[in-house]
Image 1: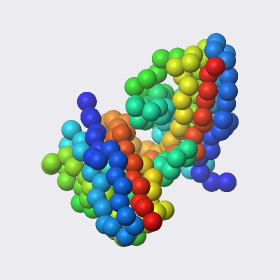
Image 2 (image 1 turned 45 degrees about the horizontal axis):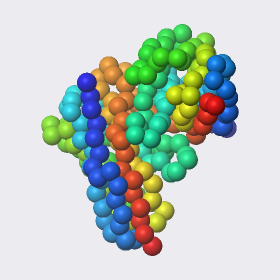
Image 3 (image 1 turned 90 degrees about the horizontal axis):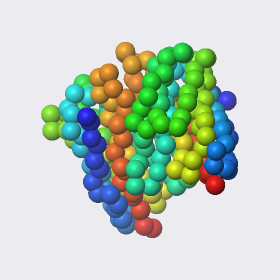
Image 4 (image 1 turned 60 degrees about the vertical axis):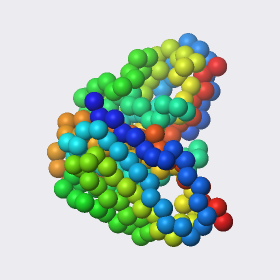
Length: 111
Length: 115
């Protein structure tokens, strides 16, 4: 059974810092991995999707990498801003399986 | 409007009552999902559907019923609501599993309180 963990559970940084969020999964036979952002009281917004054949994806200040063999993905946020404050979740989809979500990392970017 | 919508956004009901949460998507995505999100448990899959008239249980299906007569709609029914079903419910959709990006998109959620 696929299990997904995220470290750290919470993170507080000053504005302007570059930061890395981590996602680990136990079964490397995945179809894709997706990073989401969730603002308090809101739904999930898709940030980046990495297919199993890809190593990384970029969107603006966000860069996500995938290392299937080690069961890890990282989300890199460059030059963080207070508007980046949210909970970040990763979700993994295996072959013939549904999405499995991590518990999320709660990020606070202080002005 | 294009996208995925849920209704109602907020619902208060009493123990024992039947409640139906609605989900509608305009992308013609094959897959649709219902999740619940609770503090300490994260997102848990209740039911999913691979196509119209095809549904299957997720991790926490007890007490819930789904149907999918049309591709765009995936209602979730609580047959006899219990306090433990107080939660935020999210509907999501994605393309067909075989091929495509399989990116999952979420609705805005329904906050359900069972008194």
